[in-house]
Image (tube, rainbow, N blue to C red; front, side, top):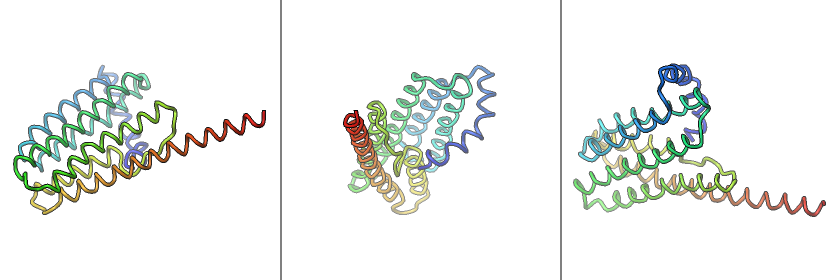
Length: 213
Protein backbone atom coordinates (compact mmCIF):
# COMPACT_ATOMS: atom_id res chain seq x y z
CA UNK A 1 0.00 0.00 0.00
CA UNK A 2 2.84 2.39 0.77
CA UNK A 3 4.27 1.86 -2.70
CA UNK A 4 0.92 2.61 -4.32
CA UNK A 5 0.06 5.77 -2.40
CA UNK A 6 3.50 7.16 -1.70
CA UNK A 7 5.21 6.75 -5.07
CA UNK A 8 4.14 10.06 -6.61
CA UNK A 9 5.20 12.10 -3.58
CA UNK A 10 8.58 10.37 -3.39
CA UNK A 11 9.12 10.95 -7.10
CA UNK A 12 8.56 14.68 -6.75
CA UNK A 13 10.97 14.93 -3.83
CA UNK A 14 13.68 12.70 -5.31
CA UNK A 15 13.66 14.06 -8.87
CA UNK A 16 15.86 17.17 -8.30
CA UNK A 17 18.41 15.09 -6.36
CA UNK A 18 18.31 12.37 -9.01
CA UNK A 19 19.02 14.93 -11.74
CA UNK A 20 22.16 16.03 -9.91
CA UNK A 21 23.32 12.42 -9.57
CA UNK A 22 22.81 11.79 -13.28
CA UNK A 23 24.91 14.86 -14.12
CA UNK A 24 27.63 13.52 -11.80
CA UNK A 25 27.70 10.26 -13.76
CA UNK A 26 25.97 8.10 -11.14
CA UNK A 27 23.92 5.23 -12.60
CA UNK A 28 20.73 3.69 -11.28
CA UNK A 29 22.24 0.19 -11.32
CA UNK A 30 25.22 1.45 -9.34
CA UNK A 31 22.89 2.84 -6.67
CA UNK A 32 20.86 -0.38 -6.62
CA UNK A 33 23.90 -2.60 -6.11
CA UNK A 34 25.39 -0.26 -3.51
CA UNK A 35 22.14 -0.32 -1.58
CA UNK A 36 22.07 -4.11 -1.80
CA UNK A 37 25.59 -4.50 -0.44
CA UNK A 38 25.01 -2.03 2.39
CA UNK A 39 21.68 -3.59 3.34
CA UNK A 40 23.11 -7.12 3.39
CA UNK A 41 26.15 -6.03 5.40
CA UNK A 42 23.97 -4.22 7.93
CA UNK A 43 21.55 -7.14 8.22
CA UNK A 44 24.25 -9.74 8.80
CA UNK A 45 26.52 -7.56 10.90
CA UNK A 46 23.82 -5.96 13.07
CA UNK A 47 20.65 -8.06 13.04
CA UNK A 48 22.66 -11.26 13.00
CA UNK A 49 24.58 -10.21 16.12
CA UNK A 50 21.61 -8.87 18.05
CA UNK A 51 22.05 -5.13 17.50
CA UNK A 52 18.40 -4.77 16.56
CA UNK A 53 17.85 -1.07 17.20
CA UNK A 54 20.93 0.09 15.31
CA UNK A 55 20.26 -2.52 12.65
CA UNK A 56 16.71 -1.30 12.07
CA UNK A 57 17.90 2.29 11.71
CA UNK A 58 20.83 1.49 9.42
CA UNK A 59 18.84 -0.90 7.22
CA UNK A 60 16.04 1.66 6.98
CA UNK A 61 18.51 4.26 5.76
CA UNK A 62 20.07 1.80 3.30
CA UNK A 63 16.73 0.90 1.78
CA UNK A 64 16.11 4.57 1.00
CA UNK A 65 18.55 4.05 -1.86
CA UNK A 66 15.85 1.90 -3.42
CA UNK A 67 13.79 5.07 -3.80
CA UNK A 68 16.67 6.98 -5.35
CA UNK A 69 17.65 4.41 -8.00
CA UNK A 70 14.24 4.56 -9.66
CA UNK A 71 14.33 8.35 -9.73
CA UNK A 72 17.83 8.28 -11.25
CA UNK A 73 16.69 5.79 -13.90
CA UNK A 74 13.76 8.01 -14.87
CA UNK A 75 15.96 11.10 -14.93
CA UNK A 76 18.55 9.48 -17.20
CA UNK A 77 17.20 7.04 -19.78
CA UNK A 78 13.70 6.54 -18.44
CA UNK A 79 14.60 3.12 -17.09
CA UNK A 80 15.36 -0.11 -18.92
CA UNK A 81 14.28 -3.74 -18.81
CA UNK A 82 17.74 -4.73 -17.58
CA UNK A 83 17.65 -2.10 -14.85
CA UNK A 84 14.27 -3.40 -13.72
CA UNK A 85 15.73 -6.91 -13.57
CA UNK A 86 18.69 -5.75 -11.47
CA UNK A 87 16.36 -3.89 -9.13
CA UNK A 88 13.96 -6.81 -8.72
CA UNK A 89 16.70 -9.36 -8.05
CA UNK A 90 18.43 -7.01 -5.60
CA UNK A 91 15.18 -6.49 -3.69
CA UNK A 92 14.60 -10.24 -3.38
CA UNK A 93 18.15 -10.85 -2.16
CA UNK A 94 17.97 -7.99 0.36
CA UNK A 95 14.62 -9.20 1.73
CA UNK A 96 15.94 -12.73 2.11
CA UNK A 97 19.12 -11.62 3.87
CA UNK A 98 17.22 -9.36 6.30
CA UNK A 99 14.85 -12.14 7.34
CA UNK A 100 17.58 -14.78 7.36
CA UNK A 101 19.70 -12.58 9.64
CA UNK A 102 16.81 -12.24 12.08
CA UNK A 103 16.35 -16.00 11.90
CA UNK A 104 20.04 -16.52 12.65
CA UNK A 105 19.83 -14.21 15.67
CA UNK A 106 16.66 -15.86 16.94
CA UNK A 107 18.09 -19.37 16.65
CA UNK A 108 21.19 -18.27 18.56
CA UNK A 109 19.39 -16.38 21.34
CA UNK A 110 15.95 -17.97 21.74
CA UNK A 111 15.76 -21.34 19.98
CA UNK A 112 12.81 -22.36 22.15
CA UNK A 113 10.61 -19.61 20.73
CA UNK A 114 8.87 -21.92 18.28
CA UNK A 115 6.15 -19.44 17.35
CA UNK A 116 8.59 -16.68 16.38
CA UNK A 117 10.65 -19.15 14.35
CA UNK A 118 7.52 -20.41 12.58
CA UNK A 119 6.18 -17.00 11.59
CA UNK A 120 9.66 -15.83 10.59
CA UNK A 121 9.99 -18.77 8.23
CA UNK A 122 6.50 -18.00 6.92
CA UNK A 123 7.58 -14.41 6.24
CA UNK A 124 10.70 -15.62 4.47
CA UNK A 125 8.68 -17.84 2.14
CA UNK A 126 5.64 -15.63 1.61
CA UNK A 127 7.61 -12.44 0.93
CA UNK A 128 9.21 -14.17 -2.04
CA UNK A 129 5.87 -15.57 -3.22
CA UNK A 130 4.26 -12.10 -3.06
CA UNK A 131 6.93 -10.70 -5.35
CA UNK A 132 6.93 -13.70 -7.68
CA UNK A 133 3.15 -13.66 -8.07
CA UNK A 134 3.29 -10.10 -9.39
CA UNK A 135 6.23 -10.78 -11.69
CA UNK A 136 4.64 -13.92 -13.14
CA UNK A 137 1.29 -12.21 -13.68
CA UNK A 138 3.00 -9.31 -15.46
CA UNK A 139 4.94 -11.75 -17.64
CA UNK A 140 1.65 -13.38 -18.62
CA UNK A 141 -0.01 -10.04 -19.36
CA UNK A 142 -2.41 -10.27 -16.43
CA UNK A 143 -3.38 -7.22 -14.39
CA UNK A 144 -3.18 -7.78 -10.63
CA UNK A 145 -3.67 -5.42 -7.67
CA UNK A 146 -0.75 -4.27 -5.56
CA UNK A 147 -2.40 -5.86 -2.57
CA UNK A 148 -2.45 -5.30 1.14
CA UNK A 149 1.25 -5.73 1.90
CA UNK A 150 3.89 -4.92 -0.70
CA UNK A 151 7.62 -4.76 -0.10
CA UNK A 152 7.68 -1.30 1.49
CA UNK A 153 4.92 -2.29 3.92
CA UNK A 154 6.75 -5.47 4.92
CA UNK A 155 10.02 -3.65 5.49
CA UNK A 156 8.46 -0.95 7.64
CA UNK A 157 6.64 -3.44 9.87
CA UNK A 158 9.65 -5.74 10.24
CA UNK A 159 12.11 -2.93 10.98
CA UNK A 160 9.77 -1.31 13.52
CA UNK A 161 9.15 -4.67 15.18
CA UNK A 162 12.86 -5.49 15.32
CA UNK A 163 13.71 -2.04 16.67
CA UNK A 164 11.09 -2.30 19.42
CA UNK A 165 12.33 -5.79 20.26
CA UNK A 166 15.80 -4.35 20.67
CA UNK A 167 14.38 -1.74 23.04
CA UNK A 168 12.90 -4.50 25.19
CA UNK A 169 9.24 -4.19 24.20
CA UNK A 170 7.80 -7.68 24.76
CA UNK A 171 6.30 -9.59 21.83
CA UNK A 172 7.00 -6.75 19.42
CA UNK A 173 8.91 -8.93 16.96
CA UNK A 174 6.33 -11.72 17.15
CA UNK A 175 3.51 -9.25 16.50
CA UNK A 176 5.36 -7.66 13.58
CA UNK A 177 6.16 -11.02 12.00
CA UNK A 178 2.57 -12.19 12.44
CA UNK A 179 1.28 -9.05 10.72
CA UNK A 180 3.73 -9.50 7.84
CA UNK A 181 3.00 -13.23 7.43
CA UNK A 182 -0.77 -12.73 7.50
CA UNK A 183 -0.62 -9.64 5.28
CA UNK A 184 1.62 -11.41 2.77
CA UNK A 185 -0.73 -14.39 2.60
CA UNK A 186 -3.67 -12.05 1.98
CA UNK A 187 -1.67 -10.23 -0.70
CA UNK A 188 -0.90 -13.48 -2.50
CA UNK A 189 -4.60 -14.35 -2.43
CA UNK A 190 -5.51 -10.87 -3.72
CA UNK A 191 -3.09 -11.17 -6.61
CA UNK A 192 -4.19 -14.69 -7.49
CA UNK A 193 -7.84 -13.63 -7.43
CA UNK A 194 -7.13 -10.44 -9.37
CA UNK A 195 -5.18 -12.36 -12.01
CA UNK A 196 -7.97 -14.92 -12.29
CA UNK A 197 -10.60 -12.20 -12.66
CA UNK A 198 -8.56 -10.43 -15.34
CA UNK A 199 -7.97 -13.69 -17.23
CA UNK A 200 -11.66 -14.62 -17.37
CA UNK A 201 -12.70 -11.04 -18.16
CA UNK A 202 -10.41 -11.10 -21.19
CA UNK A 203 -11.71 -14.49 -22.27
CA UNK A 204 -15.26 -13.16 -22.06
CA UNK A 205 -14.35 -10.17 -24.21
CA UNK A 206 -12.72 -12.44 -26.80
CA UNK A 207 -15.72 -14.79 -26.86
CA UNK A 208 -18.15 -11.89 -27.23
CA UNK A 209 -16.06 -10.46 -30.05
CA UNK A 210 -16.09 -13.84 -31.81
CA UNK A 211 -19.87 -14.11 -31.50
CA UNK A 212 -20.36 -10.63 -32.95
CA UNK A 213 -18.19 -11.45 -35.94
